[in-house]
Length: 281
Image (cartoon, rainbow, N blue to C red):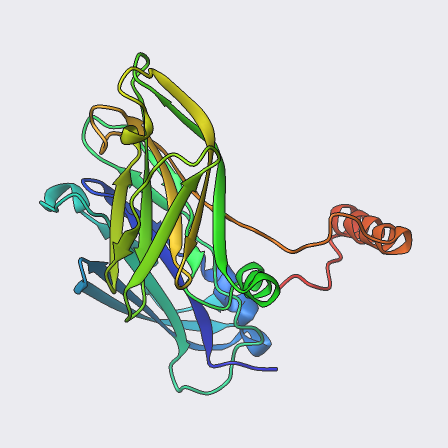
């Protein structure tokens, strides 16, 4: 099957941080039938429901090699923008220039963003499919609800550990999210406006006399959303030390038949020893 597009890919834009995105041209070339064609790379930046910046680049490939002098590095100077307490997000599209089906797959290109700010730690963060994520599709088909979790929550007043959530809604309809801890601590339901991101500081999970909380957290929502877990200073929530994605609640089998497991082991061996992988794009 051939396609005229790759699934759009999203990356977060934390408040106060510059963002660098380096495109790997070889990953595009490998997805083109015969490795040749023209691809339009589009980037849209959203904050609080508005598209605040756009960029387009034409990429020309021959035999999987980028042949024109297109810019493959995108930079957003977020440290120079005075935003409120909510993050933004980047939405990337890759479409064939003539809208014909030149892609052999529509699997999106998974890229890390590099984030930096004056006098702050530099960190990397990955993103998510805007739609067509197989684990999410299987989850909703099996359970009828969107649900993701994070299993390593730690808030500590004495050591200055703080944590937040960044919930991204890249769609045209508002999303209502329910957040639960493993011990049912109260967290108000959150409405994420269309084409927006909401930051939720979790310091209030601590009781007035409590100094440390370690636990697990789960999100369910009226529609699929993109969830990130952010570690930071407890007094300065925009001084970030780590930025991670949530994990979907999956319906994958925990046990497989012995012969299937054997075939998986053979496949891993062939991939690692000889580079043979029939599923690799």
